[in-house]
Length: 389
Image (cartoon, rainbow, N blue to C red; front, side):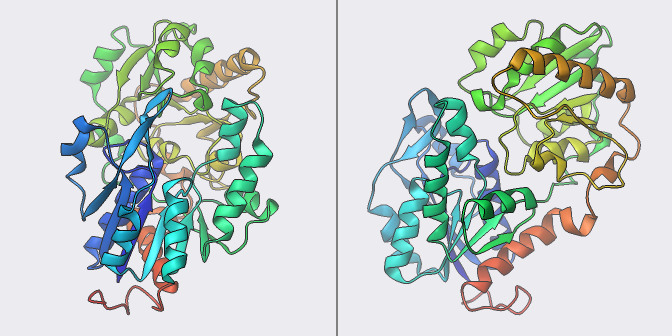
C-alpha cells in the first residue's frame, strides 16, 4: 500500500503530532508498505536531524511561527500536489490538519484520493488561551476541515464526544499506545536523582512544551513545598517566564529517546498541568515508567485510568485559566498527597493504571492505523494486504 502522510509537524520537532507521524511512518515501513511524508521544512540547522526519517520526506518551504519559533508553518507550494501525483498513494493520512493538512485534503480531493484526518490538537482550547476568544470560530474550522475527510480518527472517547457535539461526522476511535520497552521503571537512575536533588528531595517532574496553554506556572506553589524539587523538561516560548515563575526549579531543556526515559523513571511524581489535551502521551509515558501522576481532571487524562485501578492518577480538578493562583495551591496539595506514596522507588503495580494491555500496547494500535488506512484504499485488513500494491 502506498500512503502519503501530510503532517503539520515532523522530527526534528518534538511534540505529539511529530511523534505520532513518525511512528506511523516507521510502522508502515516495517510492515512493507510505502509511505511518503510531506511536512514543513525544519530550520536550516536541523536538516541533518530530519534526514533520519524511516521513509522519504518532502519538505515544503516554511517560516517560524511569530512568537513561537520552534513551530514551523508551511507556505503555499506546488511541492505538495507534485508529491501526491508522483507517489500515487492509495490513501492520504492527514496528521492534525490545519494549514498544510488542509491543502493536502484539497489536493487529495482533486485527485480522487481518499483521505483520513487525525484529530490531535485542541484548537478551541488554544484559541481560548492565546486569544481569549474565538472558540466558536476554532470549532467551525475543525468542523470544516474534518468534515471534508473520508474518516476522522480521534485518540480518545472524550475527543469523540467533543467532535460529535460540534457536528463532525464519520469519527472512529484510534487509541494511542506507549513504548513499554523504552519507558520502564527499572531505568530509574539514582546518580541522576542525586545530581538533581542532592538533599534527597521528592522530585516532581513536568515533561512537555513550555507554552502558555500548558500552564506550567501552576507548579509555582509546588516550588515552595519543603523537601520537593521541581524538574522541568522541554522548551518553548514560555521558558524565560517560567524560569522566573518557578524559583528553584531545575530546567533540563529538550530531552528525547533513552535519555528522556531515564529522566521519567527517576521522577517521584509526574505533574501534567495543561487541560487542553486530546490524549496526553506524557501521562502514559510516566505511568509506564512506574511514576504516579497528578493531572487535570479533564477527560483525556482520566481516560488513561482503568475504573478498578489503584489511585495512581491524582486529579487536581478542572484547571480554570482565570484563577491560576487558587489552582496552583490545589495542585500543590495534590502533589503533596502523591509524593507521600512515591518514596524513592518505583510505585509498585503502577502498570495497572493502564487499560487492558491489548488496547494500549504500541504495535497492535499502530497495526490498527494501517487497518484504518486500508479501509479507505479498498483493502480489508493488514494481514491480507499486499505491500507491493
